[in-house]
Length: 269
Image 1 (cartoon, rainbow, N blue to C red):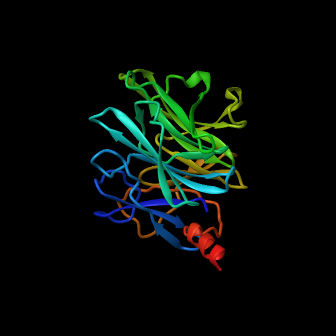
Image 2 (tube, rainbow, N blue to C red):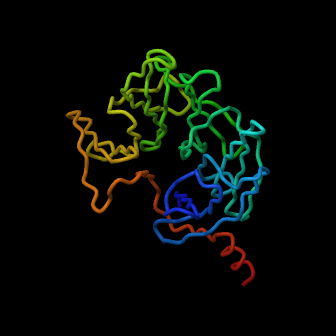
Image 3 (cartoon, helix red, strand yellow):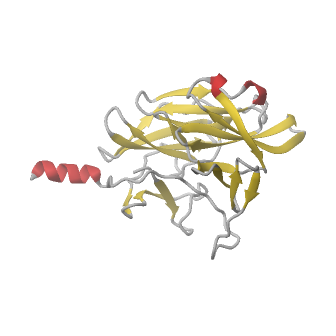
């Protein structure tokens, strides 16, 4: 199972971090099973969270949900992690940077990744990682030629971390509205970044087909970029008008969101 969905009590089902009260569900799209998770237990007054991720801990065969909540009053970012094995939340070290962007963490090589920016300069985008085994934060270096990136959108192509990068000429002055799609061919090796293509702004990569087409998404549409002839086409989506779109890729599995309860039941038989 490689899918995590969250729903807001006062809006239709969608991925949205803006409500004060948020219900959390672990959902397997293959079996259509879902499980409402308990309150994550942030120490602040609000139950809301701002960024999240879902991943697999191969050291103990466990699935984890990670949530981060930004406190504007205490100027800290609390992070909690959920274990499917124990059906419980635990607090881990606070997030090591000021402004993680509101998005899903990209899971690659046993780590979750989020795009972040510093409090000093808007033109200082970086990638922070969280190792689900060691529960340690790290940083993935970007290609040297794009260190002045303003906006990053993370994704996974195959088993590789990828980023869509929006450049800027000068901080807070001129934005070069052209996304560079980069793929890290060997995880952790900065020299292995390769630029795949440039596409129109704010398109995030979802997956690549055997025919060499990259599926990209923005807030309003999906696009298919052909690596062969460098063309872009936009598939028609039926019965969807003027809505915010967000897509996620998952790996098919029969793992149950109630795996802990089923394991306990088997032990008692």
